[in-house]
Length: 87
Image 1 (cartoon, rainbow, N blue to C red):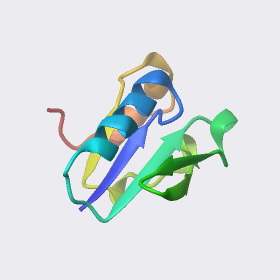
Image 2 (image 1 turned 180 degrees about the horizontal axis):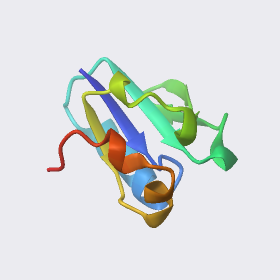
Image 3 (image 1 turned 45 degrees about the vertical axis):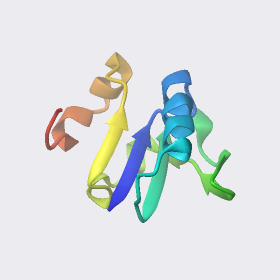
Image 4 (image 1 turned 90 degrees about the vertical axis):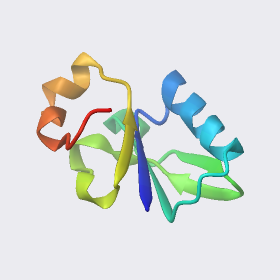
């Protein structure tokens, strides 16, 4: 199972990363995604540096579960078309 965090460099994203790091959830890959201004940043997760990917170019089919804070800026780039199911 793969997970993604949209807005990974923001407050909610960083808190989500912190919670996942402490959890016992088992997954294969974690994709960290944010706006263009955060592209290339690296975030430490369980001893590994994960590079932040650009939201506008991210392939949503890579993760079975995606965490995000619903913001107007995401709607502007058409994020809704990628949503499979809201919990």
